[in-house]
Length: 630
Image (tube, rainbow, N blue to C red):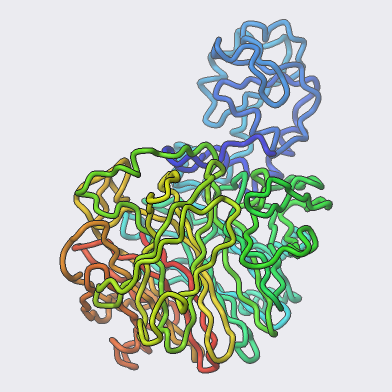
C-alpha cells in the first residue's frame, strides 16, 4: 500500500498529496534528486517524507531522517526512524533535502545545524510554474490543485465527452482555464494543452473525437488529467462523462466525476450476470508503477482476495476481466477492489449483447465505526438517513436495487425500501432484512409492486430498519440498475445516504454544499442533449421528516457563455419526484440558442433535491448516473 494520506472525511482532501501526485511533479522531483550529492539528510518537519518517497522513490542514498517534534523521534517514516534535528550537524551528509514547500523560513532556522559544506535543497525547486497556480503566494493552497482524472476513450467505435460548467464563477473566480494532459493505455503522454473556460458560468465540453482530430492521434483509451487554474470555492473538477457509440448508439452510458483522492478499497462493483463480461478499468493515478500483486479483487464479504499478477506502469490503464480473477462469480454477488491507494475512483464496464455500459465504483471507507445513535434518532429527524433511488417509467423500464456495503467495518445492512409515486404517495414498504456483508440480494421492483404502479416513474428511498437488529454508520449505499424492457439496454448508478430536508441536524447532516448544516437548497447541473440524444433528469424531493408540501424549483437555461436565456418553474411534491426533459420546458429556438455547452441549472432555495440524469436516444438507448451540484 502506498504510504500516503489522501482524503479525510473531516478535513477534506490532502493538498500535499495532490501537489506530490501532480503529473508535472515527477520530472521536477527527479531533477531535484539529481542535484543532491549522496548521502542525503532528509529534514522532515511536517511529516512529508513518507508520501514523498512513496510517490517519488528515486532519492539518492540517505544519511538519516531528521524530525523537529520530539514525539516523532524513533517513529518510523518511510522505513526510517526519526532522529532529532540536533543530530544533523554530525550526520556526515553531503546534502540536505528539506521536505517542505514554502520552506525558506525552515531553512533559515537550520543554517547553523547544516553539516559542513552540505548542499541544501527544498521541495520549492519542484513547484509548478507560477502561471499554473491560483495562489502563488501559498503553494499548498487547495485551490492550486483543483484537479481530477477522467477515463477518456476514442477507440473501437466508442467516444467519450466530458461536460461541466464554470461553477467556480459563482464563488468569485474571474479567469479560469484548464490544463489538460492525455495519457494512452501504456501511460505515455499523447497530448498536452490548455483550454479556455468561459468568463461567465458557461459550459465546458471536451470531446474525445475532437481531441483526436486536433492532435492527429491514433485511436486511444487512457486517462485525461484535468487541472483547473484560477478556481475558487471548489478544489475538485466535477463533471459528467458520456460514453457513446459512434455508429449506431448501441452503447450509451454516463458516469460522474472521479473522486480525486485514491482509496484503500472500492466497492459497489457487480459480478457479471449471464451473458455479461465485467471489466474493471484500473488506471494508475501516479508516476510510480503499481507492483504486481498490489491490486486484488474479492467477493464482497469473502475475505479471500485474489491478486492481479501484473505490474501496471505509471499513468497506464488496464481493463481487468473480473472473471479472470474470480471465475464462476455471478450476479447478484458483489466485488470489492483492494488497490492500496494506487487509483482514484475506478470505472467498470459491462458488455452484453454488443452493448457496453460504464459506471463507477465508490470509496469504501476505512476507520468508520458503527454509530449506535442512528438506531435511536429522535422523532424530529423522522426516517433519518435516506438514499433516494430513481425508478424510471415502469411501462418501459425494469428497476433493480442492490444495497452495497461501503465501509470496511460494515457487517450488517438492516434496510427497507419505501416506494413513492411522483406525487409523494407511499405505495410500498419492503423490508429486505438485516443483510450480511456477503449478501446477494437484488430487489426487482416488479416483484413488490403491482404491474400498473409507477408507470410514469417515481422513486424509492432505501432506509435503515432495525426490526431484526443490525448496525448502521450513515454510509449506506446502493446500486440501482435500470433495464429497457424491449431492447435489453441497461444503465446503472450508485450513491450514498444522507439526511434530507429537516431543519434539525445530526452530526454533519443534512449536508450543505457550503457552510454548516442543514443543507436546504439545490443547485444541480443538467447538460443538454445533442446529436439526437435527449437529456433528462429524474428529480427527487427526499424528506426525512415532513417539509414544505411542494418545492419551488427553477429550471434555468444557460448558454455556452453562461448567460441566462430562459427560466421555467416546476413543483415537486414532498417525497415525490419529477421527470424533467429540457425540451418539454424550453422551445427548440431557446435550446438552439443555448448551443453546444449550454446547460440547465436546477435551482431551489426551499428544499434540497437529489437527482439522476442521463440521455435517451431514438434507438432506445439510455444512460443514468447521479447529478452533481455546486
